[in-house]
Length: 254
Image (cartoon, one colour):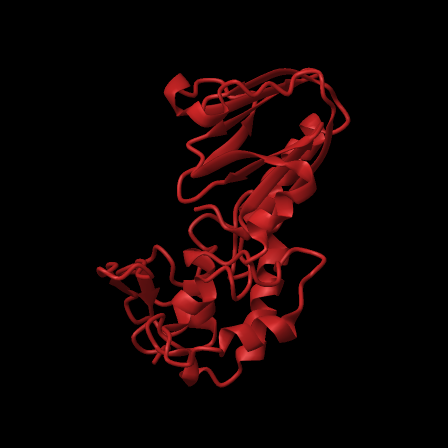
């Protein structure tokens, strides 16, 4: 599942493949931008901001968001054509944006307007734990997991990290923010976790990178808690816009 670390790593791959090179192909398969062709322009920068990506080329900025299932791939062999929303070729590399949740071409000079609503970026130069903690506790009656995933609080946490952070701080995902005894500690740990995983292909929150040992609770319904042995519980999302599947240990979390 794409989270801030995934996007950071994706930006690094695109940067290595494209930056400093001239586009020789620009095929945007979105009706609104189907006539846009940036071929002949040099790719100057690739930026990540929370879960958003910006490819700055010539006068434009290609803005994308992976949402739940999107990805960017270099040399995308075997990908069905109907899944590819954009193809960029520069030098010997072809980059494809696949199943992107958002894809738009913006005026480069104003591309950051698209992310002006975001809180401090956990992997960015603007990271500020004090602002993030203040944002987190602004609505004390909100479920913790929903608050952590709100990109206006801090940019980069998705459902995996939200569930893992709840475990580490002994609270269930649906417990309210008011029950957190150390909200500053939560945002600091969030940044540490994403930073540690920013270049890892296989995310780990336990410190153990062996297969099947990487996570505390996420995706482990029915399996024993790594601390106490109780079976990990799971709740399916409800009807609310903020609801997501959640995992917790009934003994370690309250």
